Image 1 (spheres, rainbow, N blue to C red):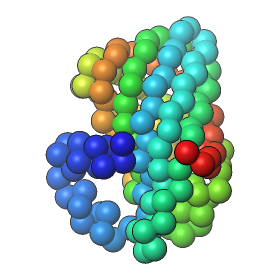
Image 2 (cartoon, helix red, strand yellow):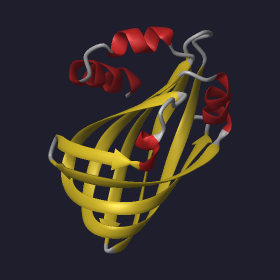
Image 3 (cartoon, rainbow, N blue to C red):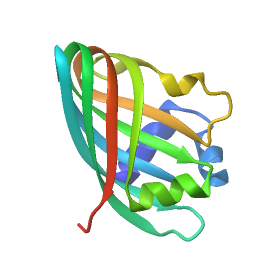
Length: 149
């Protein structure tokens, strides 16, 4: 799954190879999300890769949303980590909170989030829609949790 995710992202985002070579690690996720008015939920699975050691940690991801909009969609997420602390959090489990707006139809999507307002982030987020359709604006809580496959 991670290799398919990476190949799709490299095709969509030129220059990603260089970013992966320079990073501390990355998180590759396959996610499904359902949103009805006022609430949404979703989840998926993925892997955290430490690029220094090659170590892989398998993770489950859960997401809860509160806000407007609706839809169902499937998408891949790649988070390139430039910080050891974030890599450690991803391996051991972490909650993340944010706000965002998303619109997708099939493999086309556009997204915006509160983290894009930060000037120097210790990570970079890449998203590739697979299928489904949605229009949402939400507050969300996301949890990464390690597991043994």
